[in-house]
Length: 307
Image 1 (cartoon, rainbow, N blue to C red):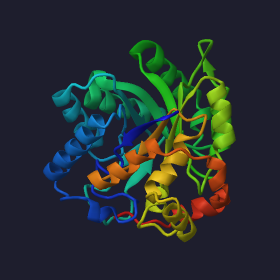
Image 2: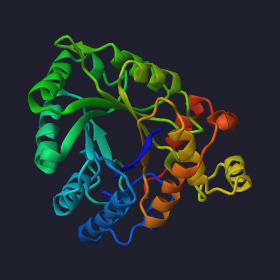
Image 3: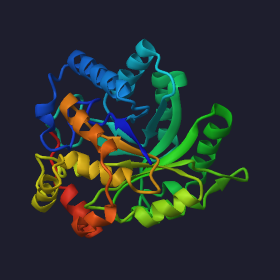
Image 4: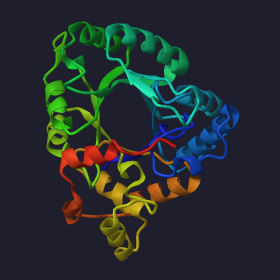
């Protein structure tokens, strides 16, 4: 069975697109958020979480994580980060643009240096952030060659995260990429939840090829929680005497291709509800009726506000 990890998207910056995110933070000063992130990391680690996922665009997320790692010196953890987006919000929640995508070689070089400086020896997995067919990153030989050198010379495992209605096509394109006679990617991170399971078959193929799979957005940016808007799913959770968070993440954990399922918890209460998923046994097929057409799901997701 997959394990639960913790993603820092909602902990490293004051704005994020989780429903009700603004009410989850004890304060938005750098000092308040650093202390809060440390408490959340402590709680997750003490509960058995061993995978922590961050990105260059998560505000100060890499720095918050490094401070905690150096203070706690935890054993047996995996740290993954991502390059490809630049954080542009300037520590504001109200702004027209929070992050800008750039999958160029120059941006990889710049962000690799930043991630390496921020996370040091803790950095184990480095991923392309939100690779798409449209960005062209998987056809950029110079970028792929540089990622192979990171793998071979710097000792990090290389991965990619994917997004959008064509996640499956991107995953399948990535599966066939090699450098130096070896498969280029060791990890793939994709959105999978009971509303948007369309990447599942491609993730299964990647898993069969030997890639490790990270599932993100298991509660659909808060839509599959008690504050969410999916009434029939909330009713199903009540019928099963479960929190919606636990039911949603249990379905993700039950996927046979999953290695890690990320919690995006921003409060101790959310983390506890997410962790409860580990004790829930469910046949994911029983929730198949909640799936939305991929295009409709991503269209709805694009309307979520950053708070």
